[in-house]
Length: 125
Image (cartoon, rainbow, N blue to C red; front, side):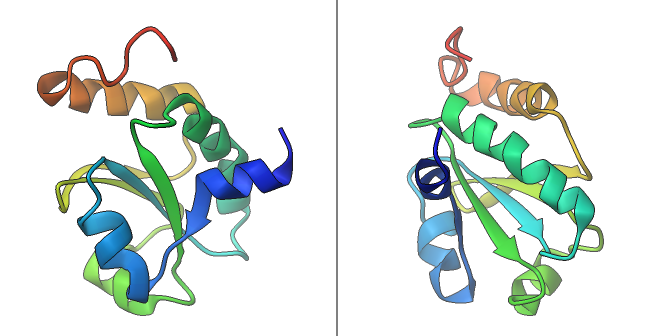
């Protein structure tokens, strides 16, 4: 997969677009709070690119640079990066801190969404 396609699946969100892209999204949104200087964040990015492919059309994945957007970092009490927070209907549903495997992220999403949307993570993943 080329970098251009990947970048369209995992894109940057900031204070100006957070409300629309995350809180008002009609589908669940997995948000990566990251920083460019963080080695763990750099290691997680290709994992999230793969998760984005597996979740295409079911979960939107975006990232927020905590250095560029300290207001969002403070609002969601981000103390460690990388931190993943899944939002559904404007509410936080899942929080994962640190590096996680693709399988672990998909498993956590499947556990949560099994209650509300039983087919969101079917055998396609």
